[in-house]
Amino acid sequence: MLKSTFVPILSTFPTKPKKLPTKFPWLTIITNTYTQSPQPVHQNASLTTPPPLHQHHHPPTSAYIHLPFCRKRCHYCDFPIVALGSTNPTDNDPRISNYIELLQREIVSTRSDFDTIPPLETVFFGGGTPSLVSPRMVLSILDTLRVKFGVCEGAEISMEMDPGTFDGRKVKDLMGMGVNRVSLGVQAFQEELLKSCGRAHGVKEVYEAIEILRSCGVENWSVDLISSLPLQTPQMWEESLRLTIEARPKHVSVYDLQVEQGTKFGALYTPGEFPLPCETQSAEFYRMASRMLTDVGYRHYEISSYCEDGYECKHNYTYWKNKPFYGFGLGSASYLNGLRFSRPRKMKEYMGYVENLENGVVNYCGNNLVDAKDLAVDIVMLSLRTSRGLDLRSFAEAFGGSLVHSLCKVYQPYIESGHVVCLDEEQRAMTADEFNTLFLNEDEIAKGLSYIRLSDPDGFLLSNELISLAFRVIDP
Image (cartoon, rainbow, N blue to C red; front, top):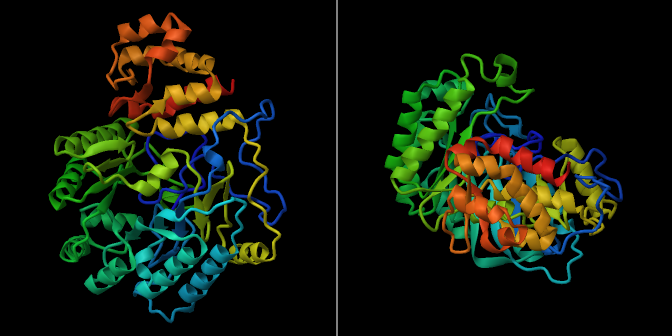
């Protein structure tokens, strides 16, 4: 799921395994959920006229569904979850059935101020451990989405699944309902690391899960790995990457551990201090992943994501392209009409939120007034996470050529050092001398430059600093 407590400036790496919807600084929890007019996430009153960029007013075609159930809470996790215990639950577990009913009520009661409602192109079941929920209940959610919004034929329907929580029959049932992409939460291939993280599975279950996915014919599946774990050595990390490559998933997500307050790791460890690796060691883990995965043909298309050609996670691209999306369920986040907001993280408050939604006293559709600076910041931050980078021509059309020139000026030393790459209209990487010649004339910058992106891996490793520089240019 998306992580709502992401640091104010984008960290070098995303926050944890799995979940993409809540790892951004703009996803703050609404403290007064039931007001008629929720507060917008950003409030820069100095610029109120939105730019000529209306993508954020389009109706969403993606939905994130939060299924919060886990067997136990992992030691690094601060997501909103419901721990069920060591045994896999049954259909009759009221903690699950009552929640699914509540979730469906939220979907049904969601208002739309759009003239047309296009069918969903992506659905992502995150958690938690969604594979603990029975196929019958997953189908009931999908049916509710189909009735409310429609779901495209061939839509990407992803589900996070943990080793030890599914068998072949469950996978085949889910595939029959339309689930066609699996994100497998492996995290590590070393028994001692899995135990130290508080994971509910072991290495044996990892291999069993991989074999089940293969035998069931799941083509589009991903492996999640965590680096910079306590006592993790370069040899361990190399082994996890090598064994992942041998398993040949279509997609690999690599996350650097971030120690969160309120977690067991937060009570035990201080970032950068033993037994956690120092910043230099974490950077080497990142470089090793980039080198090993790209050497065997995976494309590093996003700061933490690798894939074979054609197997990018379409749902996550919704976030990177700053497109609107629905979020449903405990603690989930949405982006509608330029407003980003999250549901309550506690079950009782979430129940109250759904009741107020049904009674028409929750308005999250916004007033269509989007602060131009905030939108520019979001676009830069999200675009620079990707290998494609920032489309300077579209950005200039929306926010003006002078802002593009200012961004290029602040990035000039990093272009010369190779941390920022400039691309011309033919997507050719320009030399620093070519850039410096263009930079002498603001009009030539607009004509000659097409994209800027961060280099892999060294530019990505400086993403925190580079994106913060852009923030200061956009909103000094």
